[in-house]
Length: 433
Image 1 (cartoon, rainbow, N blue to C red):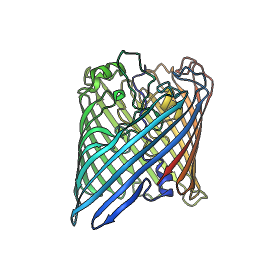
Image 2: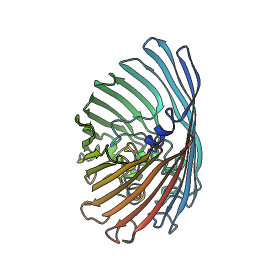
Image 3: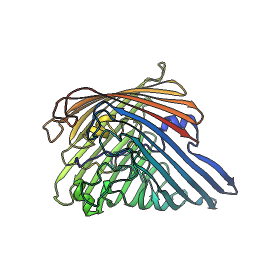
């Protein structure tokens, strides 16, 4: 069992497409008067997936369907001119049908309904404090982007009495709230600001880890500089032993990052450096990336070209990385990041991406990934992958997003078991309200 499985946050859907479809995306306003607001929240996504190759599924060419609905209420009430109380209570129903995913982490027999968000908070112009079950994200999700690893019944029975099942919908990952949180945000939208937080997971695939951290940022028109310290406080010993995550108890992670345009309108720059100490062995490992992009704003379809290099040490624990800026972050390659590995560790990755917008309702893109120096330098899981995708706002309450991938291992000793090109396909139907 690979100790670094994938973490996916489909988030509140595909950000750019949702913005085009609806300014409020997934909320229907019920009350908005006298400083009081109450919303009915609803997210609905279904996806069909197929893979010509398998990475743990007993079917030779599995196909499967995933779906979820998130529904409930959120709201706020003003208690003074600049202060409010707020909160949310939501439930998620999820399911996987068919053969289960290509990694065999779901079987196609999963369905579950559980509480997702249940939190309350206070905020004013400079302070925001919240408690409860909620998502927590820092930066662009390279380390921390919600508790969104959603396994199914595929690992049941390996250890008697232990299950990592969280309701399936592995790719869509509808469950992203940490079980318990306390989050204090200090500062406004610009200048110096900070987040001080405590989180506890109830996700067996994350060893139900408990962590605390502090994030400090300086936000300006030219970009955001940030630094974060994160410390592991406890793990579930059975789950940690199963997934090889014992080192999270006492683990120390420190990162510095930047993202912005450096004052150049069409430029995009992003980078992060992470150093991490294993809480059991004391071993150090690093991860880092550097990315640059340019938007050709005066050309038809306003194409954007991005290049990124990422390096993950052997032994680096990617923690709670997730789907944040869109396809390719931080799931680098749909097949590699979700099924075949390297799952955000023990590899070097070259990425080249092109995105264009033919119309206000259509965005298209293509991505190339080259994975090297895998498996502690042995290269046995080296590969390259091409993803071609689109996001089409078909109607006010329907977004269609197809993606096709061509994944080619360099060696027959890869997790695929051969060096053939795998053609992988997925299509999502997203219903925002």
